Length: 340
Image (cartoon, rainbow, N blue to C red; front, side, top):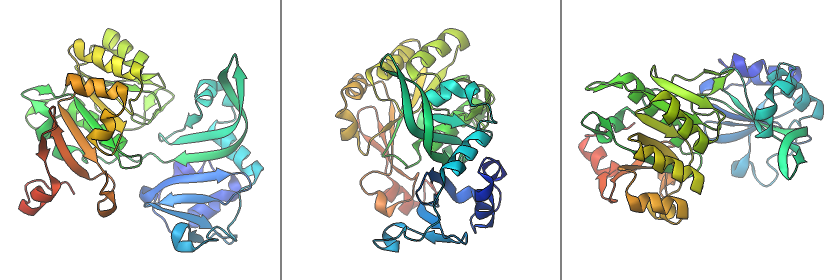
């Protein structure tokens, strides 16, 4: 595999050679899954692959038939344990708070999801033990992917509050990350401004020991691994942002935090799971925000017709009232807006 040294060095020694020899590029590798007693799998350019005992990658899924994972190399418990020890630099106790939330962020901003036996204290998860499942999600930054949105997102010098919608896996976090960078650094005709990021899942900035591994702009401040509601409030009180950003808002507390940010004069950038505006309106916490008109722009990725489009492709941009401002089919015909 070309590149990916940060990934290779955290894998168990017995798995490193397999990944190194794979005819993949690091840029296309999305996830690596280690499950005790189950096949060694990865996702590359949107397709799932397993590995034979010889290390040769084999496509799985519908293309492989009913027994598509039969004969694939399986992961041992010791390989999961060794990988976790490498990831935590043999000091997992130092990552107790992250482990409690079910993930670990490593150098390069890559995030390792964990599953196993939970330890409960007074009904709340205190930690994980007997970890048997790892999901390594590779951090890839796509600089410039949000550049085409900029003309739609400014009202003079002010950034319009914007909500990015898509089903899971259609690139809304990647798009939000690039928007933060562009707004923070400034673009042609627009000066850079201070952006505050409440990065609850460590996916936007991908901080490692407090330092962002992703380029999120020169004027961006980050509260890493902090719940969104508390993080947005803390940023407004302490860092004086003109724009605040949060990924995957959902509950009442998140919605109220965004409302309070807007009341303090901040523009809001956020993402949420949903294939259509109607689907979002079906969530009580989001319905109130939409009814109040907090978001001046709604950007839809993927959606019902995602089968004919690429991941991360914009299907539409809508105004506060739901009026469509950008239709990719008509724009693509005229060549006015080359998103890809």
